[in-house]
Amino acid sequence: MKRIGVLVSGSGTNLQAIIDQVASGFIGAEIGVVVSNKPGVYSLARAQAAGIRTRVIDHRLYARAQDFSQSILTVMKEEQIDLICLAGFLRIIDPLLIEAYPNGILNIHPSLLPAFGGKGMYGHHVHEAVIASGVKYSGATVHLVTPETDVGPIVAQGITAVADTDTPETLAAKVLQIEHQLYPRAIKLLIENGLEIDGLRVREKITK
Ligand code: GAR
Image 1 (spheres, rainbow, N blue to C red):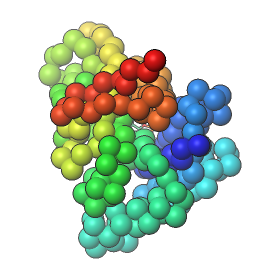
Image 2: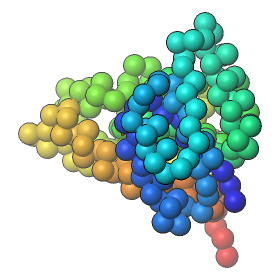
Image 3: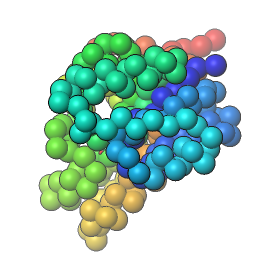
């Protein structure tokens, strides 16, 4: 059975969705470890409640971003992780980790990439920018992680309308609901079916 490692920084509602869909058997894999770059976040309690091993790798203790990513890589190798899922993980990861997991790191982002992505675009900043721009639709994107932030091949997207009355908070709540459906589906696709990656295009493998 494939082993998933989840990287988190916050409350972990996406982590919870993954835990629940592994427990239900929808995702045919096990979660080997949850790693947070922040001590005390609620994600860690969620993982512990589900009996999953947790580690805190505090980015503030590392002078170089490379060494922070190297520590994450060491844990992932120790835990024999096949697929890494970033679930509300708000640090940039170094290419050394990405090279160690080619097409093996997924991220979820709270907009329809390539719009509203890149450095500094995370959490509420995304929803504020979406509303200020006047676009009528937003959503969530699951993509493979490449060295440049938020531009890797797109595995799955889900959309929601931006209502005239939406605030960054109400939009965030609508997008999170989409995320909780989308991320487990994308993980299942990658882990069980396999995906064909052709430049930026990702296709489901046709199985007979
Ligand atoms: C989610 O909306 C996720 O898409 C976003 O942080 C939130 C984490 O929520 N991630 C990013 O903005 C990454 N650029 P959660 O901790 O409840 O899963």
